[in-house]
Figure 1 (tube, one colour):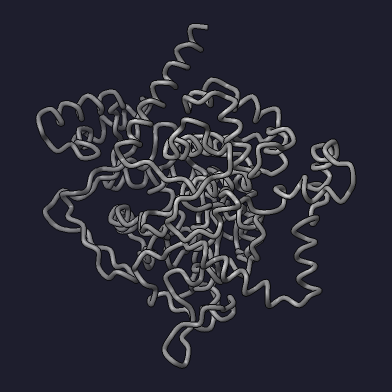
Figure 2 (cartoon, rainbow, N blue to C red):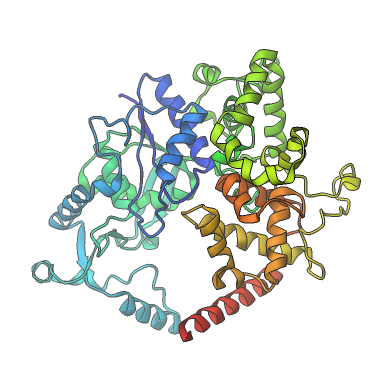
Length: 524
């Protein structure tokens, strides 16, 4: 069997560290067996599509050194490699299932489904995802109504048996058929759901191993049933453990920067990040004393890595560990190579340096002042007061003035920064004018009950560590989206997060403000 693996990121934002993690494992397995590693862009969710995200995926993976054999920019025998360009293929395959009796047309509207769901809830009946109303329609009648708005649903088994998928790491995973419901395969707009598109593509691309995050385990039974309904061979399933924060929660940008581009822009070496990702769940090559080798290359992984030996314990994304690994690689560089890395990082892109000139030159009297005026454009930001930096972990620390406005609880500041981060992440355009328009708009202001000057000061301090900088929106533009979001995440890590009750109260107040702002806008 030829080993063919793939990753299939969605272009909905900055490329995630999880994409790098999955990409590394998939690439290594393919290379170990002389197979092929594919990149597919799953862009059928047009509501969350972000312009530029696809190119960001290409840039991030290539910076890491994860090169694919087939993909949207390279082509290949199985193309196209963007799902949005394959809709005719999915329609054809959805109709194949309707014809074979494994799927059916469903004409229930969303309002009808909501009403039936509410009725079942009131009567304490199990509605699950869908009650199967259209399943009983006469196929010929349904075919005559094919011109009406409808979706195509998969006909799941209704017997008392179980659907079993074989997982390389977990063994057999059993799901009672009674827990399954008839999922939508083709939406009313003609676009496929993830389930149909993924299974069809994995077959047509001849994928031998589906290596993906454990969050897709609940979809495993449906995908297994789809492969069987088509009469296709089922690939090897391997559901990898999710990357976790130190508290074992799923990694999120609220506790760790999750963008691969952030780590590139923050000055991490790609070989160090790859080494760190390789440690997650695997631990590294075995040493003579039975331990694990902490520092290793991709070539070492190709020689020693075994997919089936991955630990199911959630690997922790430990920033301190990553910094330790990165420091090792920096120390290993020869002086000339180190100097080149520093030059590339500081002025590798002349356009970045040139963009700083109109911001910092009005604040300078000598060239020697440049590093003082512009330091936060290049270096990390420390949000803790200088006198408190050496306190033991757990000690109460004073924060840099301005990060938390007077009279505001630190937990509330954490919430406001998280809302600000989300608003910025949703922006496609990233120019000073558009950033100012978005952040001064009623929607952004309504995210908190702070005065705009306090909101902008907290943002200024979060990205720079100081209360006085060149123009805020110009700084945001030059720093770039990944750096800004990463520094907001850094600032949030020094603040205590609100508890569940407090968080719910803050979210309720936010929703009320947003609703009020929307009402005022419509009245105007």
